[in-house]
Length: 213
Image 1 (cartoon, rainbow, N blue to C red):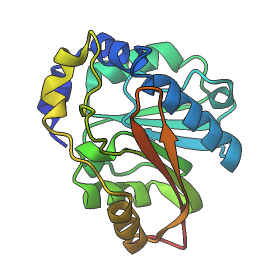
Image 2: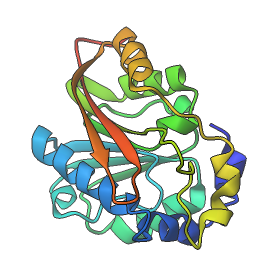
Image 3: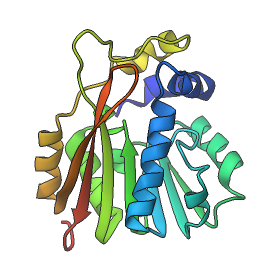
Image 4: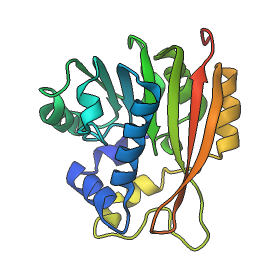
């Protein structure tokens, strides 16, 4: 993951864009995180590409015993900690590339929404496998290409995100599934999410089988 573009973006611009009604991605990610927590009944969570929270304000999160947040932007994590540290029982923050994340005590659920498109995918999945308990779940939300639609949906904040858009690469679900399987992350579910903007996303749920190498 290239840190420089992300470190040149303000959290206000990022969150403003994601929450713009015509974009609708902040609400979508929060909804999918809540559903993942409800489905798995996980007591520990790693939120990768956490930005300023990306759904951590949901009631389900307040019942978690541990939350690990991973983001490349230290300013994003500082705001996240100020917002959520008092509401969460144990909050741990890791600032850096997902690919280089090590030493995290494993969790039951890893949630990554619109983050793998910016990573060196194999290395990112190595990190996910290390931070996930045997039998734990990974939920990955991927953006799908759509003819006639820009990668970054137009909004008053879109221009500020231009540098980040240049580092974006679509990840075919089949590629994610194949690479994950090499790390004993086995596909359990795949479904399409379509927003009012016309953009489509694919959610893929994995289960860690045995101990990943």
